[in-house]
Image (cartoon, rainbow, N blue to C red):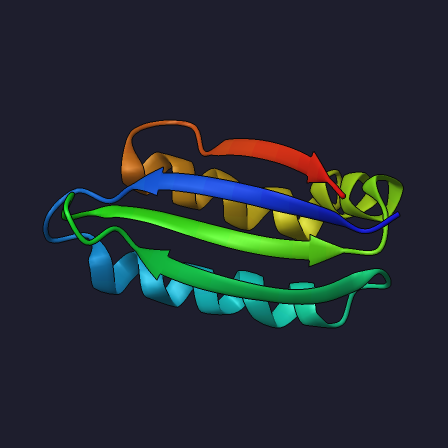
Length: 94
């Protein structure tokens, strides 16, 4: 069963460019993963700095395998350090 992963981040002012580099690296790795279907990044209209990534996967198991991947966790740790907080994940099923 396909799942949607909502990834919420609050980006401090002045950190957008550095974050974009890390997110591009992460997206490039993600696109080659088994089970990955699609992803999109949205910027909240009424709250500057708030972003939402919607990532679609074939299954929760394939998403979880990716979440635990060492390459991914290394980049994610850099993102969390840059933002000064942990990234928030929510998993939704159809």
